[in-house]
Amino acid sequence: MTKLLSMNRRNFLQTSAAGALAGMMPGLAGSPVSAQTALTIGFIYVGPKDDYGYNQAHAEGAAVIKAMPGITLVEEENVPETVDVQKTMESMINLDGAALLFPTSFGYFDPHMLAMAAKYPDVEFRHCGGLWQEGKHPANTGSYFGYIHQGQYLNGIAAGYASKSKKIGFVAAKPIPQVLQNINAFLLGARSVDPAITCQVIFTGEWSLAVKEAEATNALIDQGSDVITCHVDGPKVVVETAAGRGAFVCGYHANQSALAKDKYLTGAEWAWGNVYTNFIKAAQSGGKLGNFVRGGLKDGFVKMSPLGPAVSAEARKKFEATLAEATAGKLSVFKGPLKDNKGNVVITADKAYAEDAIDLESMAYLVEGVVGSTS
Image 1 (spheres, helix red, strand yellow):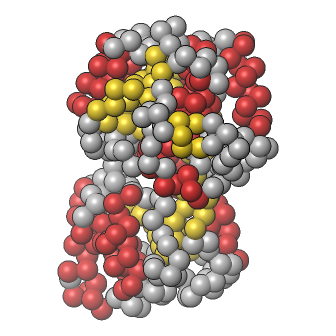
Image 2 (image 1 turned 90 degrees about the vertical axis):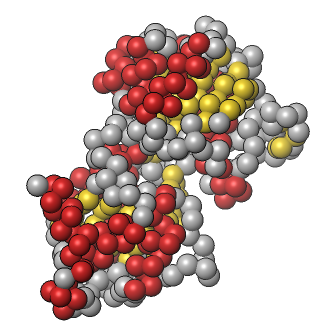
Image 3 (image 1 turned 180 degrees about the vertical axis):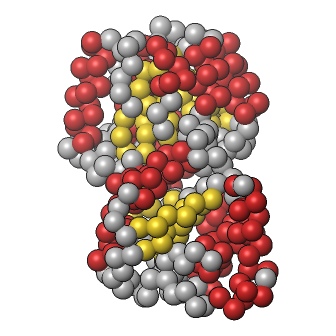
């Protein structure tokens, strides 16, 4: 039934009835948007909503706003980053009357979301990521993201106390700045516990490749890593493989503790429910939707999984103190002196980045102590 609905949605605009409906269901008028207490909101996911990862985190956020008064929620999962997502967006607008769309996957932005935004200037589109640029992209579009590297730094603290080999491992999809930022933060958190710790990273080359993710996890453990984390869409394979091999795990995107039980230390999670609630409140009150929205632990954009049973009292004390520091907006993960893994000074001793520094989003280096990266 779900598959049939999906096919009907994407093919809807090919019918004459769809053509007649086009333009008859206005979205949010202008920016700032006109106040509407009754709103239909569309969410689009590149994978399944129960993937224990990226898509599940967004679906959990969508579930929060679904309970808000006046909100009708329409969702579609497993939509590829192709023209299919344009068909899905267009049918949500014309068939369901969606006034605000959240196409959540990175590859939905260009050209797909931008094409729909140009065609439907009265509908608002907000994309998860850092791609929106003022003066370049339409005013009815925007981006939102969180400083989840703060969570990976806290993951690193838990990993630093748990590791006996002084080697921790990271399974990564692609070497883009945000992924590099997470790798660096994970190691820096561990090295705040023990400066001798190193981190080995393996890039799989794709956001979702279960076989390669399992192979990478096994390879890291074979080479001595005894705590594993990742940045892939669905961490389920990494978590289960690592725990099955007896390694400790730090989660990412959503809470995977049920998959690893006593081997799960903690995890860096998104708190998208808070972000989406803010967007909806602005839309319903006629306020302006932000075009470039960011936040971290302090702002409630990011949260941590509960600490697992293997986390020692000493580790818990440092973890909770650092979490409090981050929540108060006083944590600086990236500060000098700091070298990259080729020995170049990348942050001088007199400099410390604020956690909301836009410069960090263009980070293109791996810090000293990250070794053996392959793709």
